[in-house]
Amino acid sequence: MFLMPGLTWDHTEDIALALLDEHPGVDPLTIRFTDLHKWIVSLDDFRDDPAKSTEGKLEAIQMAWYEEYKDV
Image (cartoon, rainbow, N blue to C red):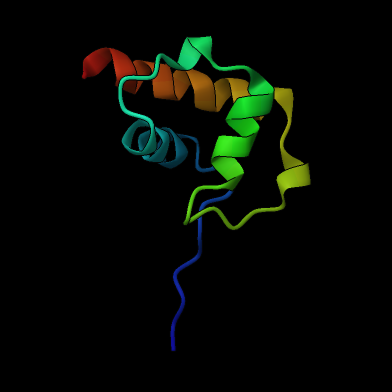
C-alpha cells in the first residue's frame, strides 16, 4: 500500500488552504501563533514534528492564509 506523504511545515500554501477550509470566515491576522500552531498540527493531513515549527514558518503560513482569505 502506498501512503501519500502528509503536510509538513514547508507546505506553506497547502497548509494555508487547509486552514481556510477548516476555519472559514476567520481572519488569520487575529489568530495568535500558539493557536495557529495548535490548528496546524491538528489538521488531518499534517505529518511533521510539531516541535519543528518556527516563528518564521508560522508567520509565512499565516500570511499565505491571509492572502487566500482576502480573495474569498
